[in-house]
Amino acid sequence: MIKAIIFDCFGVLVGEGWKAFRNEHFGKTGEMHDWADNQMQSVSRGEMSHEAIAELMHQKTGVSSEDFLQVLHTNPTNVALLEYIEEMKPHYKIGFLSNVGKNRLSELFTDHQLSLFDEMTLSYELGASKPDPVTYNYTADKLEVTPEECVFVDDTESYCKGAEAVGMSAILYRDFDSFKVQMEELL
Image (cartoon, rainbow, N blue to C red):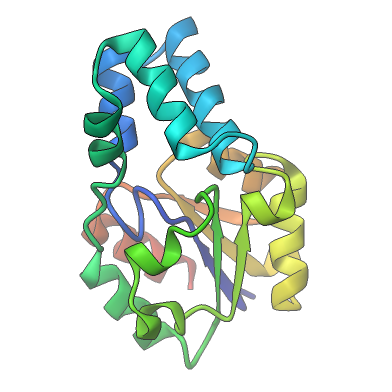
């Protein structure tokens, strides 16, 4: 029985400028794509600042640090999904598990939107990032449920597979309408 639903931030709750930048400058797959993702993971774990990655991306791509930071911080809120979460909240525990960097939440969400989440796991605080199993297990523990009682929602396939590896159900998020159909099938 599903008791908790855990959501990723970028690409799910808000749009993600990073992935478009990465794909344009480093390709959709391959060694350089993976290298770029590893650099962003360092930011997520709190090992590198936004300014440091902006300078690194400037060196690798020629895009100015200022332009990179503007792209990185282009994150429109997924209002339809947040409204749906508000409808589900009386019936399920709602979690937030993200590789989001330090101090971004107040830029991305209102206080009311943040109040929709019963527990929040942020990679930089935990010192681990998805798909590390500790991130999923830690979030389930904070929600006081087992991994098998959770649905994890993310737009990155490897992160969904990481959740499934610890026993969670997972939905690969593409758009709100298909997500809603899949969620209702699971529930």
